[in-house]
Image 1: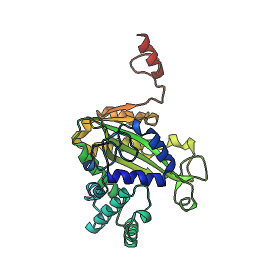
Image 2: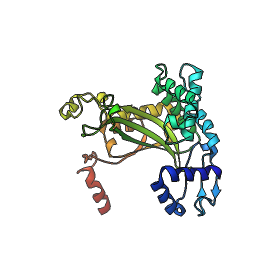
Image 3: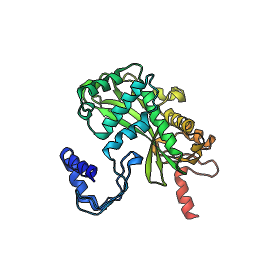
Image 4: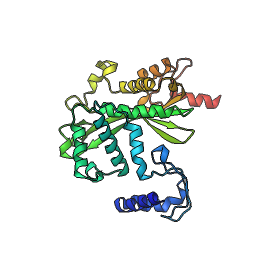
Length: 297
């Protein structure tokens, strides 16, 4: 309960508008999910807001290190000291979610160590991410059915320090950023996210962005849309036999012929929201006419 009380007071100070909304709607909240999985507890009757509620999970601050070690303790960074530093950094950031490295660190030495780790040319973002993907694949073994929630997110920055190093994400020339294509594993049996199984991050070249007439000339493998297939390939490689338990769920952006062809030809189950009014192979008419035909029948 001390951890929960501290959580409420911290949010009151840092996010007053969110906190007021939280308090007003507190009795309607069904579940509250926080990682790591090992630290989940059931608490009835929250002293902070006075309304009875069952919380399915609460992070005890002392467990942040255990979570970080589960995720990154096996990271291959070329030196065990780097891996220990990564675990320490991840634990500190988890314990102070939303804060910067400087504000979440307990000493100047911790701050310097974190920045040395990130600036080390021998430490790659791919190696750090792969450790997390491996941990997710291991956690997936415990679930009979898994949903792979897949989408692309735009991460935009408007401050000048990021302008020269990042590419375009929108038609606004004053905004630069990254794109992140992620696959999040979700377990219906526990109604909890399991973790990321794949993520690709990239920045568009500013000199070629917006040249639509050249897109059709490029091979499929050089298009951004190919990342959907790449994500499925890497997910299947990491999951192995567990892939048979997975149903991929995507939005309109995934309605791509090459991607759908890959999923069908490899026997992977999926649900994709249709964006293209494609011609039907086994019946006259087009796809968007099918619901009306089925309703009439």
